[in-house]
Image (cartoon, rainbow, N blue to C red):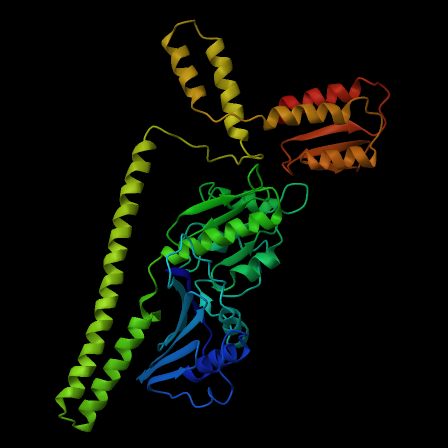
Length: 464
């Protein structure tokens, strides 16, 4: 059962460089029983195999023209579970790719199997050989920080117009407060699996909104954007309450999606088998051999490799048909739906709560028993319930109740509620979610105890 899978481009190298990286991986692995001496004489072509009691390492190697293929299959037994890791290097005239897949099988019936850890080989390859260019971004286990001048690139990335193969994890700029997630450990976890992109500012988020059709995440939330155009959104809520859980949710969702994605054809063990078989054909022909048995053996290997590739293609067809049916159902269900594209939610559930309150008010002002009232009630019933804005109104009242001057506690509480505070001038300026349309004055010295409550009321009417 497949448990881990990824493919990614690497910088210019040769099969020899790739073999050296695998050799370092094997020597450094606490689970492998191979010594430096036993791994010294790995060939440059054909087939190769090395076995110990609990480990087996097989190799396939071929070079034809500008193309080079090197593949290893490492099999290890741990108790009742057999682990198999396949790693394939494919070099063409134009680029270099690596594919890594780990599967596990139990010798005895089990209800579940432990998931494979991300192979250390991924980091070994990125550190030793360097990640290649994937669309517009180099593969890395470090985050990529956008600059204010990267607007057009961000638009291409989020619109799936950048020709990248790996998904993008986009960290939006937070509203007042700390970022939802540290990009560095996230990038380390996703190195070779996804690109971690960090937004530079709130203004940057607003500047790309129109060109991406409001598909960009914002306010500290995290979006995963796939080359197919699919998008998934993550943020703290009742189910994800801390950074570690949020990071784990993102990593495991991406892992699951990569396992279910059809492998890059040139980075599979069956493709390496076919390449070696083709090399044997060419060698036999060039040598003038007429040994039928040799030809038959080479044909058998190539046919088996082609059959494996055909099975992968058929599985992909089944998967695509299921996706088409799902999309058809989704599109049908959305024929009568609509979305807000010219504004971004400043809080989770903000649009739903505003619309529900407005529709309920309109329904209450409609004639009892009228068609308008029935439709409005039905529309309101279909909107998810949210109390976030109501909670914010109550918090703001508590913060500004009896306000006289700006204390460190009041400033911190206002920041946590989404306000930045500008103290230039005679009055403070409270800016909600860094949006200048929602700017409110607050005296630096309040003489009337009711002033704070009045300010809370005025602000709530505008933003809550």
